[in-house]
Length: 128
Image (tube, rainbow, N blue to C red; front, side, top):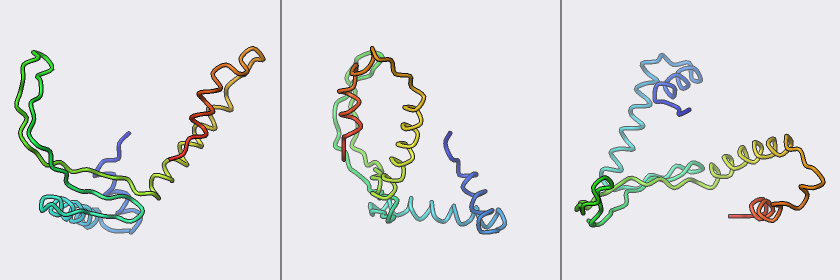
């Protein structure tokens, strides 16, 4: 379930013991500053979290998925997020705990030993 802006405001209000109106102002100022920087083509870097930048895309000819007709797609600029190392490691650590719990529930028969192990070992041993 996604975290909404109102939930962020609620959490900020509770953790800093701020009135909700002031917490909302803080969240809005942060988002407005980020949007403004991206509109100006600036890069936003938040250490331990990630970075935002604007990427430019050239015009190209696409296809309407319903009709298959060619469609001209205009040049555009889109925000792009790149996750930071610390956040990536924290998310992967929490995922590993979930995967570990899933493996504990599996029942392995003697007949199943070795079946499909090659794929599982390759995934478990993979590094970034």
